[in-house]
Length: 83
Image (tube, rainbow, N blue to C red; front, side, top):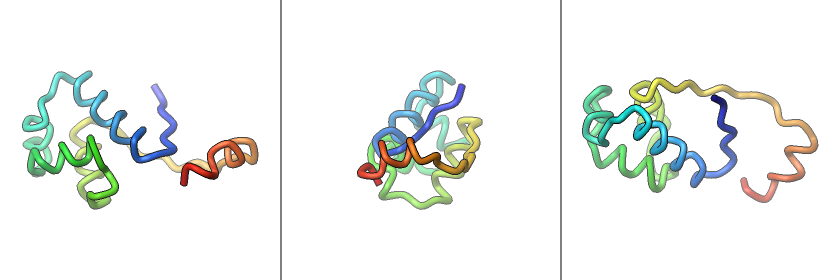
């Protein structure tokens, strides 16, 4: 299932939802990739405060991948104020 993420809040919600879908606690997810549970908590509440490397590690634990795609003009007009 694809999720399009346009805001930090959407990213946080997607990460938490995926972790819960996998039936992992924050401690479990953190332990899989060498993060602290508080880092997972921060990524699930305020991801802008974490490093890209921490995000990458959590995504690995949650079996997620990051895909970049060009925006089309319609999408850009709708979401330009969100960035």
